[in-house]
Length: 245
Length: 245
Image (cartoon, rainbow over all chains, first blue to last red; front, side, top):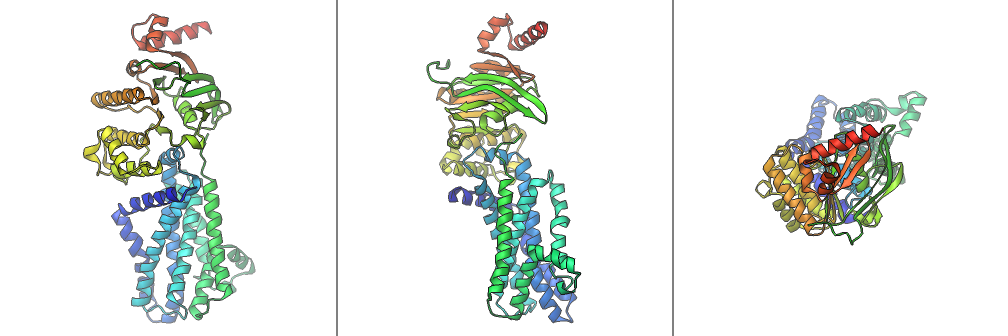
């Protein structure tokens, strides 16, 4: 693995994204607009918006990064560029690391815009710092990106890659406590929720909502999400094959 | 220029057997490709040309036998700066410009922007350098893909059907380019299913149904079969083989 080649790869992926102006606008604007919509819907109960809007700040970039990465990586695999790269000095971790850096930067920009809109314009209110919220949201979306990388190995077409979203992303969103409090779910569902990384991202956000303290529990939650991102990235790299049949 | 027989061969294929999807695609093939020459790999589609080429660049899983390139096992780390591969379909990024594509590969090989522009000019794409690769014609895409390989000034250049669908003028230009590269010491392995390109090669490897049925110079092949043109020489060889069965 070489840092030089990893950054060259990241820059190439970012350039591809930047050349697609419409995608850039969609990436930056959509999460902010959706949160604005939720805010309008919940106009009469700002306390409810404080909870839902906050969780969406992490869940949207998570979902979008998953979709973007699974499709771009799937393209790389089927368009022959992956095979070609495997004959160049690029190591597998250079490629995966390049994706992580490029989409991590994307996620940071997206979260930045959404958080700025939510806090400055939509009066989202948390006891803890918006910076902590942004950190949690970015780590969560990097996890979404890593899942996308991994999933691209199991998708033969872009069509299949999109179909993986309801399988891997939607259950995490439903069980993370966004649409129903986890404590009120059946015991076995709580067990499932506890096994899903997004749950810990939401737990961390809920902590920031009520406290300014950066407790060990908060760091542990964030550590679980970051750890899941690392595991998915390494598994994703393991699915890249220099030699194929 | 006739290949220099005193130097060791650039590529040695030794009793190579490759299976793909339960079918044996290459059955125990052996050949030596002389350094500083253009070797044509000719045969009908489905005969195993691409599989052999992928074995030489080290992206093909092989069942038994060995491929040695420049003294190292095919695909070895040390070869990734010295061997370049041009896939059958242009493996470039459609959402990047010609220049960005070639600059990316140049950077991977540790080369700069000047090398990239030189490679673009060498394939006659200088006027299109800022055009997105996705908007190019098929022949222009092939030439861009070739530039991405030329940029590392490879000692061994492996090309899979590079002239398919190109107009005669560009084909002529490319073959002149290949001849120049060989004259400057590079070794080229070029696959084709068009027999009229065979006369441009120093050596011919004729493949049929996963076996080499001839490994000779164009003149030697004419002499051995008594045919005037290489197309009928190929046909005679096939008939002789079928009679022997």
